[in-house]
Length: 262
Image (tube, rainbow, N blue to C red):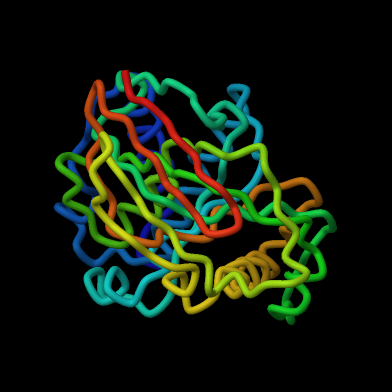
């Protein structure tokens, strides 16, 4: 880690202000290209503390950069994560205000609902399966407080893994008799199919992303709690979201989810 406490707090304050004003800021790595993933998490921790102090409540976590293509693009070998806040959860059929975001993009994902607490450091895929109530069709609205999405790994990690909001189906499907890796998905914008994907696009197995998260959080003393939502990672490339757009993700077994942007 190269950042000091004062710098980390200043960056966290800048991101907090960007979230409040919906005005993007320059990437931290523009002036300090040496910043890396650990620096990003130092900033993220301070930003989360500030958001919680101002009323936000963590209801789960999102995984990002779970595909090999995105990891290679940002020159890393692991995913990243950020919190999901209660204020940023929408239901199927919701209309999502475009002005709540700066530069929103949407991804189809599999949401996982925990029924038991889950923790590392030796969490396995079998442990995740045992702790899971079920899976739900989901969409993630990603956003960047960094100008024009010109981000490196430190920037996106600091910015809550570019988290914006999620939409989650109320249908929760138990996974006793099928393999989440084989869940297929069709993603459409305004009725036009733009992408397809499968559960295996998320680190080879959506359950593996949750095991990774539990093990990564363990040294920080964080336990994934029963009832929390884990967004297991995008199954396709993110798509820009404009006012008037309608997005639908249709999943095998899990059903579909739709949101409209106003």
